Length: 321
Image (cartoon, rainbow, N blue to C red; front, side, top):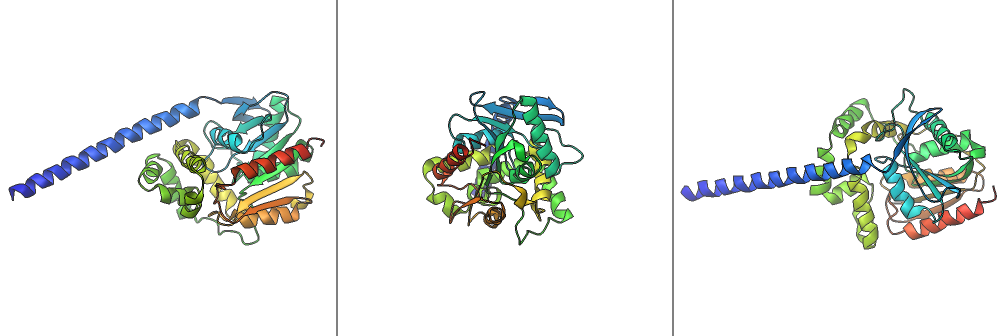
């Protein structure tokens, strides 16, 4: 009986130490992520309202406007730009509505976001840009190409979460409320990523375990960094909820009216089902090119060099427009 009490006491002490260690790690990690997103960007007042953005690359070089995906912000845009943008371009990475320091307006539609991006270019004195829409960011990128054709030098849709002939069923109200509750705090996602990283990559990044295991080490690190940098998720809550509304059962835009050189990219095993969206878009945009992979997941793991080369080729082809 005595040894049972001792064992139980030791177990309780061990659990307390484990929870204490987790709590310290959580506070440390969240503090680091808050510090990270507080620097490196600025909020610019435009004719459409305030918008947060960051910029890198030489002034006067061709402009790449990189529109981030769900769970992003300017920080995700910069990270994707380092991987996919050719050297020598001027990278503009905004935070979309409801992400980090970009306000959430009464009308958060893809059309309104596209006009907001045009106002950002106005405020920066940029006449046009190559527009790259990644995942949910492809919604506003497509609307930009339709509504501002003269300002779209070229269009790149990377794993685009846009219209497809067999649309996903929109999330019911109860599911959106549950998602809202989960996104209101940073701890649930942090625990999932820390305790079950493979599950987190599959659920949050839509990347199958096989794709992660087959990727080279640097690509695996990219996936881990992408998951880590969704934090602080509470500062992205409104944007994430809006993306859920815009991308499930996404409306079709006038694809046939887009005449900018266009590249659509996805992988068959993307857990968000963007392969058919990308292929459909390129089938209906005149002259568009579709680049599809059999594996790689939503992050296109293992294909970053080829994707970057294709984007570089498109930028050179569009230089005379």
